[in-house]
Length: 142
Image (tube, rainbow, N blue to C red; front, side, top):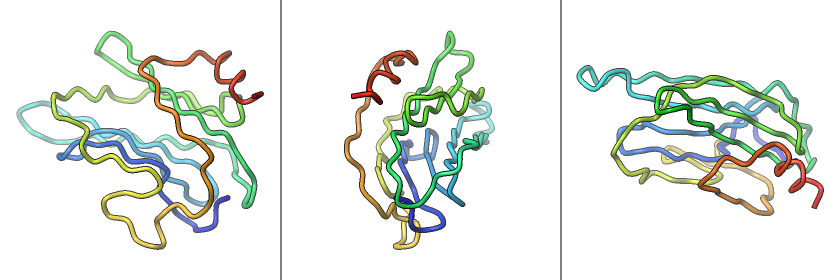
């Protein structure tokens, strides 16, 4: 159930802020990828991706986010809601040797009561490989 107007779904980033996060705002999911723009400058590029599916309050959803890497050059993010593809978006490749040591679910390092996830999560699964859409649809039907 989505109660607050903006809440964090997950936050997996390095100490420099490179990585991935998801935010629920205005009843939509926003996925963010932060990549380094050149090793010398240290500038970062943020790529927001809005999932165009309105989430109704007090309703259960199965949300699956898949990051697909293409030969260390590019990456795309896929978001499935209730087993159906809701977003496919090209994002930058997070190329870093730093550990992802800022890992949160339901909040972020800068969280407040207003930005913490307020609701219930039934299960969270992380996989080392990209799940195909048929597997995600099958998980939804379980």
